[in-house]
Length: 224
Image 1 (cartoon, rainbow, N blue to C red):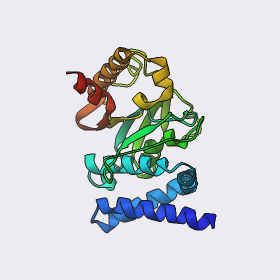
Image 2 (cartoon, rainbow, N blue to C red):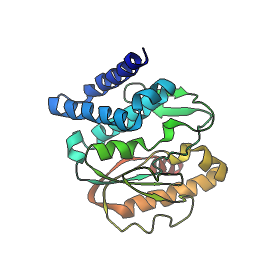
Image 3 (cartoon, rainbow, N blue to C red):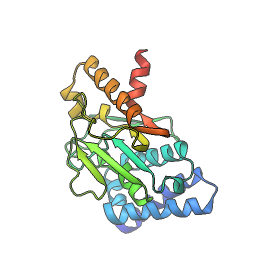
Image 4 (cartoon, one colour):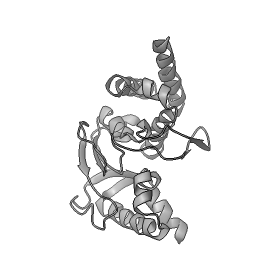
């Protein structure tokens, strides 16, 4: 019974995401990617336990489709994921996710550790043949992609990364992190961090590179 439910979870996810492409090769690549995520990271079981995981993966794949086009086009690209998530992330009291298939969804994950904030985007990129680099304050030691433990609340925290060294960049998890909110309860301090991350993104992006998504820039733009 559990096996059937898990398989149904994956098939529904693949079917939903397959709507993003008409190309059978892209759908085949998508299907393989989801199956590998299940084999290596237990995706189906985690969806069963925390349904918001499906929404997170959907969001990440949609962002790639929107920013890059074909999944195959990300192969070989060096991608920075700022606040990529970790294997020690705590669950927020609630989570709100902007989605392509639903405007906004919200849910309440279980207390304590959550699979919602595992480094799903870097895992997706790895399976697709990209070269992801993840930075986060949490534990990423078991992950196969390049990663650094960084306190993003500090000015200059990303200065060790060379100028114009990434084909694409995204940040989308820092400002919803319970740990970060506890560290910076003052909105002005969070804005300061957002401005620093936005500055770093401009410095680190190659000429002609793309910002896949930036919560930091969105926060800065709201204040202008």
